Length: 287
Length: 227
Image 1 (cartoon, each protein chain N blue to C red):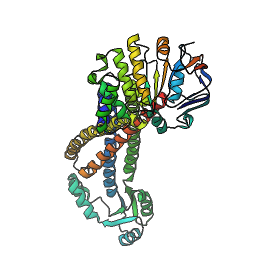
Image 2 (cartoon, chains in turn yellow, cyan):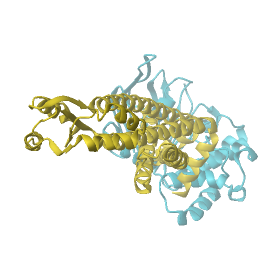
Image 3 (cartoon, each protein chain N blue to C red):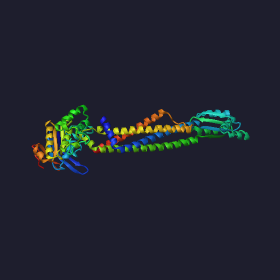
Image 4 (cartoon, chains in turn yellow, green):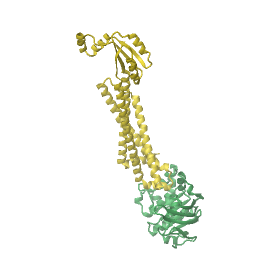
């Protein structure tokens, strides 16, 4: 095994340019993939938070039967929570959030109606619930903020697909680089390989140094990607948390460790597949 | 040891007929010359015995086994029973004499504890035990060829093939190499030497097979060079 490790090291050192090119694309691909996954995880968290805050607001006419409206809405299976906020409470809320409302209210009185606030179990049911609320007697108008959540989800999907396509292209580039690096390494040692074959070396024996080379490139690429990704992401996350405190950034070390582990597995897989294919093909060409 | 049964070999790209309906039988323990002009089919013969190529027609048997049926690992095992020597010796330039010889043991999975004794024995047989640390570039052509012979015999294969082993050597070194090959043969190894060195074939008489344009035209059990 020491012999094969040494041969793998010599092959990598002997073709330094090819080794570095392979390593660079692999690190790029894995870092990109890590960022796309982290972006997705974070945007999913943000969307979940937004979804939990989406509510249907129904503005009631003066004199509406609030008890009947409330009980009709609470009977709907999609409804998680429903409350009626009296017009005085609405004014108090508005004055708290927007101090200038106080002056307007002093001049023109309380302009706000009693308001029914409904939270749904799933954001997808918002439109259905809003439609049901609108049909109730005593409801003046209905507003709900699901639209921007749906739009954000669509944008995220597009970003996610574009990210994964880019990562797939980079991984394919890495694979081709490994194919090329192994081929160059084998070509450089063709005399030795020829002697090995004539002396009765098995294909496995001849290929082992190149499989180790692929494996080492995968492990090294994943280690470098992890070393760039984790501190880079943590710095970005802590800065964003300061800038936008309401953003629920993922900062769970266990999730990050799992992500780095997955990237390492992927790096090793790409490295091994590349070297298995390249060395097998080269030996077949010799036969 | 080696049997060719109606063997023809045509190279597909050039459509060259390298061997044409060759029948022969080389017995275990024999020393046989294979002579003929360049392109007569000597190297094609070696290539078929090593299973580097397959015959277009007919069948090649080594130790009674048809080579056509060998796949993957069996081809490697088959080659371990054959020692091969080339005109250009094909030593690895970065390895010492001893390491070049040990390379044959390494690639065939012989335990490391056996290497020293076997390498030393093989180098002694070719008279180069005192130069085991020398790199190929520090050896003469004749010495390099003797290291190549040591590498070919260190695994004690029952069959030794030598393709123009004296092609790059002066007459004195050529005779030394032939003497070494004869010594190997005396130990029971079957030896096949492809050559067009007339003086050697005439001096060290052994069975001689003559190839001409891919056909076996002469099989002389008492030797002698006649093309």
